[in-house]
Image: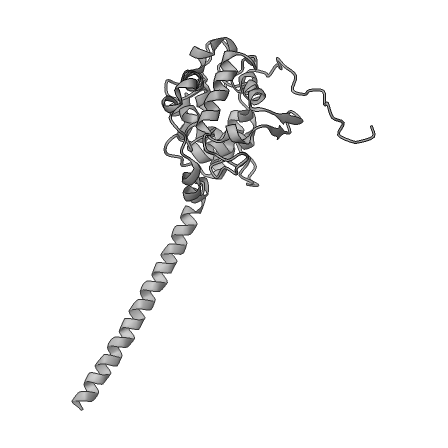
Amino acid sequence: MKNRGVYLGLVLAAILLVFGVWVLSFFGSTLTIKRVAMDSEAAAKRVAVPAAQALFNPPRPEDAPESIRAEVMLGYKIMTETSKYAGEYVSKDSKLSCSSCHFEGGRSMESFSLVGVGATYPRYRDRNEYTVDLGIRIQGCFDRSMNGTPPPLDGQIIQSLLVYLQWISKDIPIYAKLPWAVPESMDNPHKPDAANGEKVYKDVCARCHGPNGEGTDIAPPVWGDDSYNDGAGMHRVRTLSIFAWRFMPKNAPSLTQEEALDVAGYIHEQPRPKFVPTHPDKIERLIPLTEGK
């Protein structure tokens, strides 16, 4: 009788143990599912970190070989203090620099990184309808994003930037797929709501970019005379929205995709300089596209 009681006690303990494990497993799985659902959008903002970190190791400008160090350092200064070092090629009293979009001189993964561009150009661009090299691409940034004029390809400004960008692309294979590269759009069907975008701007963006988009000491203008013109990439809703979603507010991105699209739609409607081409966006093709013509 006594042995029977011990046996029943052991069976009951085993049943309770199995039940307890099942309960923990069930609620643990439920919590995991909920956590994944809550974090899915936040996780999508990040690149594949292990793959990115394996390649993303840009050298410091000051570590460049002595033979090119002066050029690399000048290129870095042009990136971070554009008005000071390339003032004649940007709009008067410009509050923008190349680092407005490419943080830390393009050496940060927390913005439109330029690490690797030295290995991935020349590149075909739909805007130009022909393959452009990195020098021509930089000229376009001055023309549009900086609302200025393009420096000459054989001049000190472009050449120093090319040397700098080649240096921070050191050890990256030619035409490698860059895991930190930002996609062109979010592929979200949400239609931008400018009215809600105005609210998002006032609640989240104005503290850094100013109530009227005029910029502050810590962030560049996003519209108005001192901002980029309407030919710039950031004037595209898809480009600005993915930048806002992935990287804004700086160091603590928190916008949903819908909020990013809304605020990009709102900023897109604000006044800014008109793009006036200072050099042709198309060149005469040397090779016919169709044989026999």
